[in-house]
Image (cartoon, rainbow, N blue to C red; front, side):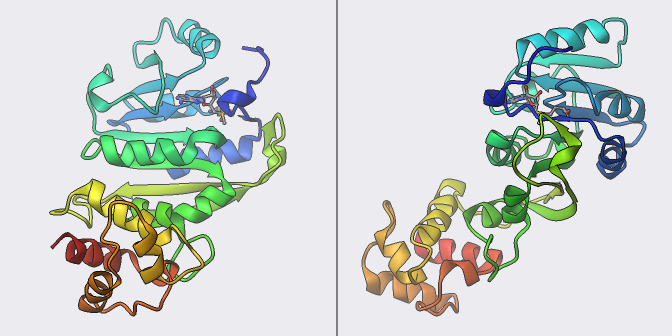
Length: 267
Ligand code: SAM
C-alpha cells in the first residue's frame, strides 16, 4: 500500500478522519444499495463505503493500488475491484447491476471530465454522486448565472443534474499536500435532462459557442463559433425569439435559456 504517490494520476490521499467521516455521511448510502467508489487509492473511504452499502465496486486505474486492494478484499464477496479507467468504463462494464450510489475523492486533473462522462454515459444508472474536486472545479460545477465561475461546465452539468456544494476541504487533509483547496459536491442526476428532445451534441456546441469568447457579447461569441450559424441576423433573431438580449454575455444566461436558445437555433 505504500507505493509513491503518482502526480500523473492525481494521487492526493485523504488522511483526515473527520473529512473522511463527513464524505461518508454525505454519500447517503442505503444498506441495500450498490456503491461505486472511483479512485479508491489507498482505501481511505473504502471500508466506510463497504460497510454502508450492499455491494461496493471500486474503479482504480493504478495497477499497483488496484492489486493491493484486490488482495485486501480477496475474502470479501461484497467488494469488487475493477482495475480500469473511470473515463472509459460504462454501466454495462460493471460486475453488479445498479442503480449506483457514487462516491469519490476524484483525481484533480480529470475530475471535470469524469463528471461529464458519468452524466453523459451513465444516465439512468446513478442515484447520486458525492464527489470531491479541486475547489475551483467544484465552484464551476455549482455556479449560478452571473457569477465568475459560471461557464460551459456549469450549464452542461446543471442541465443533467442538480448540483450542490457541500463543504470545503483544506490542503492539509491530504498527503501529499496539494497546492489547492478542495470541495465536496453532491450531484443528483435529473430524470430527464433539460435539453431532452434536442440533440445533445448540438446543445453542447451552442453552449460552448456562447462561452467561447467570454468577454464578448453572446451574439459575437456565437458568431465566432464553428458549426453554428455565423450570420449575425440569424443569431440575433434566435436570441430575441427566446427573450435574450443579444448584447448580454453568456455568463448571465440561465441554464433553461441555453436550452431555449439551442432549440431556436436548431430550427
Ligand atoms: N480515494 C483515495 C483517497 O481519498 O485517499 C484516493 C484519491 S486520489 C485524489 C485519486 C485516485 O484516483 C487515485 O487512487 C488514482 O490512482 C485514481 N485515478 C486517477 N485517474 C483515474 C481514472 N481515470 N480512473 C480511475 N481511477 C483513477
